[in-house]
Image (cartoon, rainbow, N blue to C red; front, side):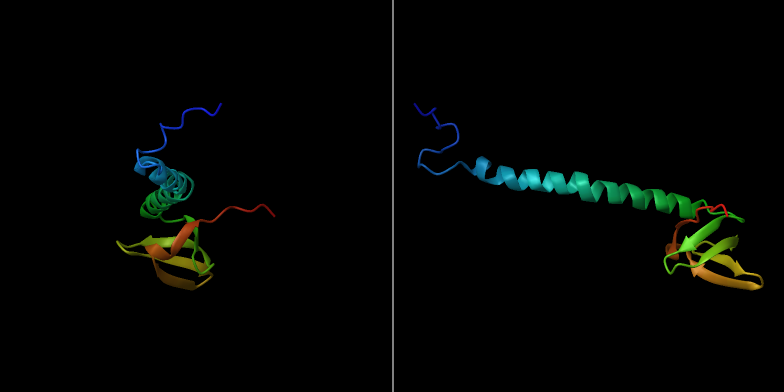
Length: 103
């Protein structure tokens, strides 16, 4: 005997509205927890790191330039990328701290 499926079917024989929308809600929840929430956490952590930059920190920019922070301004940072070469970049261009490599 087939179990009573009236729990999932409305009086007209079609599935109820909640059962039809439930997969979309689950997919939305999965996207949020796997994609949106981790990216938001990374962005918040990067913003805190950039705001805490100080002289002497080694950073890498989105363009791939490695440099040492010489000075900071409210919206920009001056980086020393070589002896006698300094560039001014926006804080938004800083993609993170440079990782120290041992040679």
